[in-house]
Length: 387
Image (cartoon, rainbow, N blue to C red; front, side):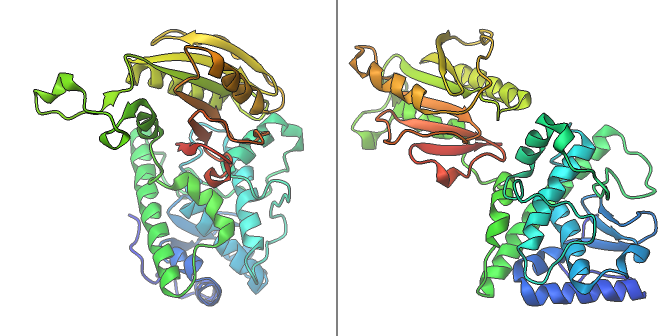
């Protein structure tokens, strides 16, 4: 059972006292991280070779801990606490465990080195090129070039506590869900503590935290605003339902034209493409009044292909660089079409590519993969996270 936010109960050994000292040093430097550390449990054990976590408890080997400098001890403690808080044990899903551990270590160690006074023990992974990306994205980049992935000297993401019996899949899933809820609450409370002390969430954590934010706008809800006119928009209610006391916004017409573009550049993985395809089908199934057409785009544009509910999607085309401009150039050219331009453009992407110099006139909804470009970095339209 995960603990409430209170001073962690550490064993009275020399290692326990040393861990307490590290927590106190952390409290003086970062109210947010210090508050977050109070939501973890700590165990001194020789069952792990260095340090590790199962998402609930931070395990520390005393023989590894004591030779470290105070800065390295602080960095090691932060490393494991952040693995817990950022959900690296449960966010892995079906990904390769070792490669996921490498990706998570690179992201977290970049955060730690941004903290004053913290250092990394020898062998800690660091990659200046990748440290500012999200963990999912670093994993995808490493997966494409496995030979370039650094070796993992200290595997520290555990499926279960050392020495625990193997759980069945249902029990493991329930435990991961409990962890996710616990740490989401911990992050919110730690942020409140930091703000009450005149601080805030460290900037170098915000990108990774965005993936965990359950308050992100559901993109289907956002899409609905493009497909209906509200009373504020000078149109009445759908008269077919008024007699039943249902004041529903009426659709702009019998059909609404939608252009959907899937990013098929080399930076989008097969797993992400499968997620895109599922979302396209969800769009078609959710809104029967849509007339939809599909495009694929890397540096070039492919399509359009007509879309109907339950139709199999055509084979994806692309695999090169990313350029958003051809898609919007096509939509701009359609303005002379008596049946265009489309009512809304939906672009499913990781967000890394060349944008048009000027915003197009067509309303645009960007649906962005986990670990993709920060939502506030899109120069036009509305961006929502595909979670």
